[in-house]
Length: 249
Image (cartoon, rainbow, N blue to C red; front, side):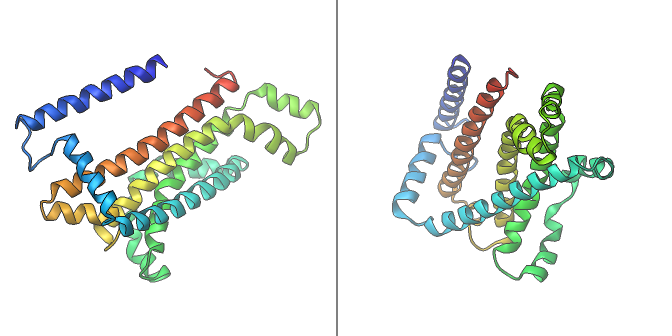
């Protein structure tokens, strides 16, 4: 609780300092507007409904991409962990995965999937999937040996050991993977809309930026930042609760 209060205090001080810097002109209004104006502009946009279509488009694509990345990442992580030889081959590729410019595959995805939202969803899933794979592997690697010995002692089958022992024990790391997968997927979707789409929050932010509409740009950035922060903090709290349950803190 004390740590949470300290974080909130630091955040409040940072917002207050930014507000003063913008109000007194130490930060140019073309560069940034005060946080209170960002919040006011966001409220105006939400009440007027002018961005509802773009918000719905981004949200639906993001949810689809998160579902795809988490599901495929989890299944792939379990399968790779069960095959040590394949893992030795894939480990260097997983470690360097985010050095690959994913957007170079967009033209190929358009050819394969058509000119619609599917290529964008696949790009978002590609951004988030490896984070889930890596954390799934980490969780399965860190299962206490005592639990594995207990499973053998009770003569559990391979499937029983997986679902009754391994997966529950590795659950905190799965939540970590989910958290990072969501963050990377949102980055992939919004960045894709920013440079490749004609709809969505990313597109609206780019359009506002190109037309010097700072109020709209920062309002939508505030919306994105707030939504992702709430989700990741909620998952972080869940992750810590699971760690305490397994006695790892």
